[in-house]
Amino acid sequence: QVQLVESGGGLVEPGGSLRLSCSASGSIFSIRDMGWYRQAPRKQRELVAVITSGGGTNYLDSVKGRFTISTDNAKNTVYLQMNSLKPEDTAVYYCNVDLQRFRGDYTGAYWGQGTQVTVSS
Image (cartoon, rainbow, N blue to C red; front, side, top):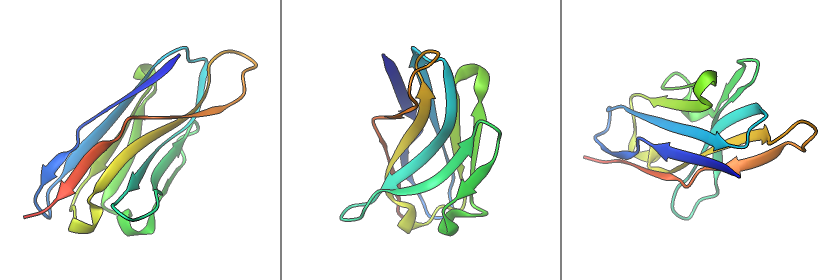
């Protein structure tokens, strides 16, 4: 069993900041990629940011320069620091972790439960 627990969402005014956290626990042998997706009402889920096991990162164009993804590998935790938030950043944010549960396992994608981020005055 693998569990992903997210925290850090909430209501913030435009221009404000939030930090999301997602911790993976359970049967984990190795982690490949960790990332954040978001889904706004009536829109498709989109990739916001991803970080590979080698430390490479990639961001959605609209968040570049405002959001930063990072990890604490010792804690199997991924963070998303979100600065200069805009109303269009409002969405449910989901963490995603690609991992192997044991040696020889396939690499599976696991999802957090989602955390609401609302940017509004």
